[in-house]
Image 1 (tube, rainbow, N blue to C red):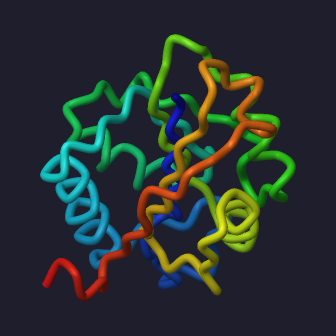
Image 2: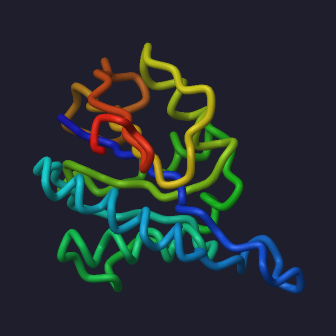
Length: 166
């Protein structure tokens, strides 16, 4: 079994208009939400072996905050340039290349691609993945290269303002 957690980056700041989209940092709420969501994964004993991220500052910062809470080395985050503004097909390609020694991978990326990809994986559909939301799916396969064509099971969808955790 292979598990994918799709995580949209946390809320970013628009305060500095001179920054390009790629370089926008997280705002304070984004940092707080990332810690809250990472702690929920820890509390619910959701394992993550590998963190994969778009290199955009807001996605990588979100991944680093998760790494901290999950007691993972921030330097082990796999930064994949194609995940920045990725179409759903790019997620499929990135997943197919993951190392099979990893069972549970978290991918930090952006809308609209991440929502579209999440909706292609399971019968559960989300209109729009809010910032810092987590969409988890398990595939009945031992190999990431077979993930795309494997039978998948929706595990959970969670986000910072979810009523289940207040």
